[in-house]
Image 1 (cartoon, rainbow, N blue to C red):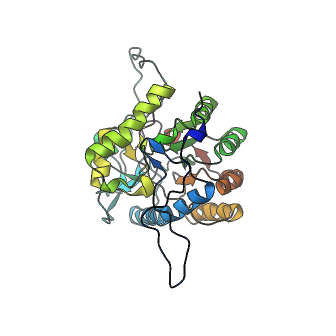
Image 2 (cartoon, rainbow, N blue to C red):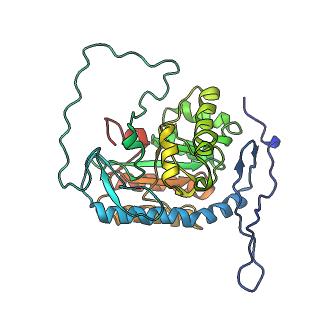
Image 3 (cartoon, one colour):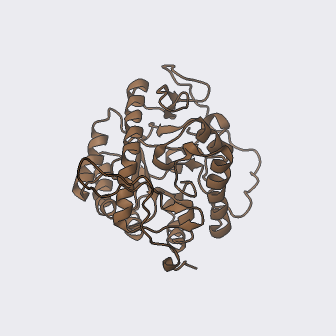
Amino acid sequence: MAVDERKFSRRRALGAGAALVGTGLAAPILRQEFARGDNVVLPTEEEYLAHLQEEYSYQEQVRMQAQACADSCGNKEFWGSMAFAQSAGDNLKFKIFVPGIAGKDELPKRSPTPTPTTTPTPEPIPVIGADRPKWGREVLLSPVFKGPSDRPYVGLTIDDGYFSRDEILNTLISKNVSATFFIIGSLMEAYSDFIRRARDSGLTERANHTWTHTDLRFKSWSQIANDEMKRSQDYSMDYFSETLQPYGRPYGGNRNTAVDSAFADRNFRDILWNVSGDAGNYTPSQLVSLYLGQLDRMANPKGSIILLHFRTATAQALPAIIDGIRARDLEPVKLSKLYEGGRV
């Protein structure tokens, strides 16, 4: 049963960081996250866009790190992800992630998957998420900028969940495109009808975008692993009988070794991005040019992970972005398709 949105607070969420710019008065800067614990704040879209503007610089840092990773790792087609070799802050050491191998020119040849001699034991009910990758801890501790590039796929991911949900889902359905939704955990109750409709479409999957959408670098292991990651996973199972895919995404892409470890301890891997920009102040037509232009500038755009948000301008730009991706002989897919077949 859908929750009446009127029960949620819509007050203006301006934090103590409101600022004055220059010598004249300026609009206060929005610094407080909206989804906070049990007191969910549903903002107006104007408030949300101001919030995204605050987050934009963090997202751009991730995209630029992804570019540095591409420059460092090269642009070969391979079945592993572009990722950090070591975690932590500004440590820009990268590797093309293949378990046990870093910095080698040649990748090991994979043996074909053996045919099982016995019928596998079926997963317990609910059997939703049967295509969920099963990664070991070494993989889970390797934050990703870009996915496997051995096939002409790009990962389409859409974050938060405040606005334009039906418009975006309708576009995916009409164009038969799959995507991964990083819905903030504490919004799941407010938008339960949408989540069920997205699930029933067969085109979408949900990943873990934490419960409160706050900067995790200042939280303890228990707060990250339990209050943020486990709580979102448990709620999804309890209310939607659906596991979240093993992909986690921290607010703004802000992460450190503690965040990586807490994610891995809850069986989630940091999935970042190498294509982004809709948190900026762009029109729909500008967004189309921005996203397709980033793909055009890559020597090898296969395996790119695209970050979008549930907002009006993005919903309006999405049909042309999808058409443009396909015109470049690429196919936008959900992350579980990008990582299928044992890819890391």
